Length: 148
Image (cartoon, rainbow, N blue to C red; front, side):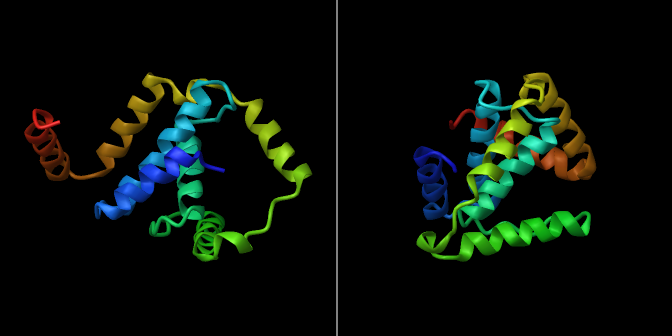
């Protein structure tokens, strides 16, 4: 379950009309903090991001379904459906299952959220976009850097 502050930041982003991926970024950020503070680990930065996106969908952020294997799309659709339901009607996961999931994550490495690993993931992700797209993003970042 995400922190109250994370939910509030995501709701603020939504009110300001920011994109769903920006709203979801708050949940991913929280997940990375959890790994860094030793609450649990992750096998890779991609897993940490996936957990954050899953929590975002469950919190009602309207993210599109991912490309990839059917199992991943099915899980994302399940999360989105859970996010559409009224908050009171969501049933709790059994304690045994929750404990098992938490235990499995606790055994994973903390290095998935290291600055180096996240930088590597960001560069790999950026390379999938075109050169023009990367250039536009860099130009926009340079333009808005002084404003912030």
